[in-house]
Image (tube, one colour):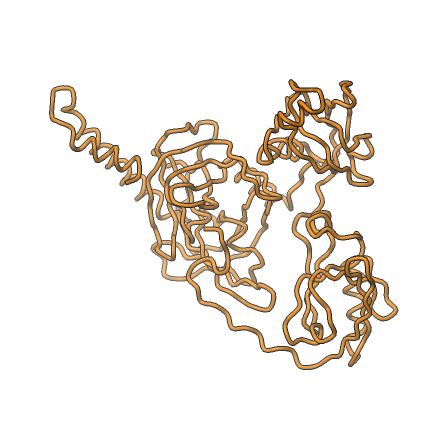
Length: 453
């Protein structure tokens, strides 16, 4: 039995001594409050359905969302509507499905903003503040797990400021033991005053769920409405300076992180940062990182500085403390643009993240992300991971070059592609033919093909 359920059961079974006489009344008051908050919040929790394109398949993905404003703003998770070609929203008590426009998404916080045009004003939620949230307080999670609309689960705030070791993710999550299951993504976590304190994002086993703090969600919503996300960029990779390394380097009392690499022409490079520097403070705030998951706090500090503004880093170099001033740049794109061809392959632009995560040897070209089985591309020998550098006589330095080059050979029955594969150059002859039959769409009522809830 879960801890809260066991505790409540024990209260019911307590002897009716003078000191315990008021317990049933208190339990009844708690129960009435849970019912009241549930009934107040459920009309504002919507069902989100998206048709998403994954390579050569189309899948139906379902999740939850909440009404952020009476005129039709809907907050949900980025992973629910990622690569969606069509999104619809169902409102409790209304029979029709509303087509939704995707205003914008932010992969780094897992937030997406939708817009619908309701016939009449919608019941919007009331937002709280994350600074008012306390570990141990009771909360409700509301969503549509496994397609079961309006499901309410009860629990506590288990922790605040959780850093999950997930690449590119900037959130310091609220952890809760209120159930967050598949299909609950995008629904609200609310306190017992009915105020939304977070957007549910993911579950990790039974009784461990993670929620995006409400302050983060509202800030991202405002930026998406304003045209896009602007975050500061330094241009380094790093690792924690744990106690063993600190002792080995002769600085056992120093806390911080180690700079592993510096991106050429980045703000860090222009400021003189070097691999091997120890960063101990950012704008006067101490940096502490003992484990990989601790790096998120530093990443959030950098991201919070508007591009173009200066920041001050305190570093240790050769046991000498230095102050380094750096003017932060704009964070490069996290989600690469993609292009699909009519010969059975997709390419992506080579962003800084693609370059590093795929360990490419070049930052120029177009990265092959998918090749359909039985397609002309597969027959020619193209494989995912190739980097296209040339199509016929047309050089390909970026995705826009690729688009122009592939358009120029649109009428040809065959054409030559030059790719880089590891350290080798490959010359592949593409012969147009019948495209393979696409795989049928799945009708999975949950978030199809996704490991997130």
